[in-house]
Image (cartoon, rainbow, N blue to C red; front, side, top):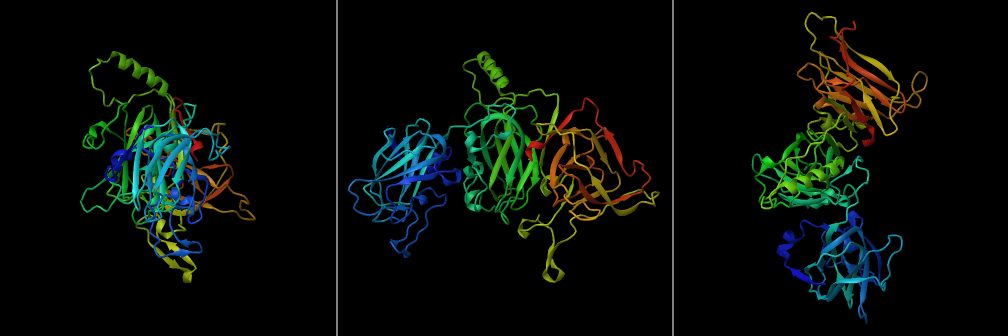
Length: 572
C-alpha cells in the first residue's frame, strides 16, 4: 500500500476533515502490548499533547508521557489498539515529542477488522500492512497519509527495535451506525453516525472535531474554544456535515466546564446540499443558509436544549453553529430523524435525470415533506431555553454555573447561600380592578394518564393570565397531610400569543422540569395547566388575582380537533 509523508504545516489541510479514530475520547483502547517497562502505552491515545517531564524520575528511570519499552530488543515491540469505532483509515501521526536519544527509530502499521469480543493476537494471520517500515526522528511529529483502507477496528503499531513514542493518532472516516427506523430520533451529527466537522473559523484553544464525539469532556480541553476577540460584532462558527441528511428537531449545546469563557449567545443555520463545498471560499454566501435557531443566550457549565424553528418536514445535510462573540463549547448534538429520506432520494434521482449534464449543482432548495400532525419535543428545562416565556427558579451547587447577573451572597451566618430575586411578582390589572390581591395558593396535581406507549401525550388546553405572572414551586415529601412520595418531574408547555389573539402554534415549546426547579410564567404567556408525571405533586403558587373566575384572572382555550399537537416525552 502506498504512503506519503506530510509536512507538519499541511496538517490542517490534510487531516481537518477526518476523525481521530484511535482517540480515547471516542473509546480507543490499548488491547495488548509487548513491553511497556519505562512508560505505559495508554499515553499513546491521550487527547492532550505530550508534556515534558524532563528532570522527573521514578523507580524505573526518567518519566515520559508516552509508550517506552526496554532496550536491546532482538526483534521488535508492538502495541495493539482497538479503535473507538470501525472506520476506514487515511493517515497517521506518530509523535516522538520529548523522546530524544530513546525515540523509536522505525515503525510500521498493520490493521484488521475483527470481533470486539475476540481480541486479535500479535501474530494473527489477518493483519494487513498499511504503512511499511518508515524512519522516525527524535522529538518530532511524523505525519503519513495512505491509500484509504477498508473498514477496520484494530491497529497494530510495530516499533523497531524498541524505544519510545509519545502519541499515536489514527485518522480516517467513521463507518456510520444509523438507526434502521426512519422515525427514530438520534444525533445526526454524532461522529459514530458519520458526522464530520468540516470547517471552523477558529480553533485556537480546542479543536472543532471535539464537538461531536461521545461524552461531555473531562475539562475545557475536550471541547472547541476560540481565542478572545477584540473587534465589535465578532463571531466564530463551525460547519458540521450530518452523518445522513434528515429532518431536524432540536439541538443540545453543552458548555460543560466553560464557566467564564462560554459564548454570550449562539445561532444555528441549516442547508441541504449533495456536493462538496469549500467552506472557506463559501464564508460570505450567507444566503444559502436558512436560520433554524435565532440568536439565543447561553449560560455557563450546562447542557442547553433548544427546539429548531422552520425545520418541520424539511431535509438538511449541514448545520452551521455561530457563537457570539467567541468562547468555548463542549459538545453539540443535532437531534432529528431520517423521516422522508427515501422520498428525497427518489426526488433527487428524478431531478438529476432531468438536469443537463453540464449544469453545475452546488446547493439545492431544502426539500419539504408534508405532515398532518405537529409534534413538539419535551426538552429538559433550562433558564436559557425558557427565557422567552418566563424564569426558572432554582439554586446551583456550583455557584459559577448560575446565570450571569444573579446576585449570590452567603446567608444565615454562613450556613446558606442566597440567590437574590430570581423572580419579581408582576401585576398590571386595570385601576378599576382594585380588589386584585397577591397571595400564595397550593395546587395538588394528579399525574397525567393519557400517555401513549411510545411516549406521546396530546395537548388539549392552554390558558393565560392577562394581568399577572404566575409562579409554581414544587413542594417536597411530608407526613400528615403532605404527600409521602411525590413525583420528581412535571411538564411545562408554553406559547406566545398569535396575531388572532390565540396561541401561536409555531411558538409552542415543551419542557420537563425537575422537582428542584420552580417556574414563573410571564404575564400573558399561554401555558398548559400544571401537568405532573408519574406521581402526584404539590405546588406552591404565587399569583395575583381578583378571584371572581373572570377571564381577567384566567383565560382558557381548547385546541380544535384539527389542531393536533403531540408532545414527545421520549426526549426526557
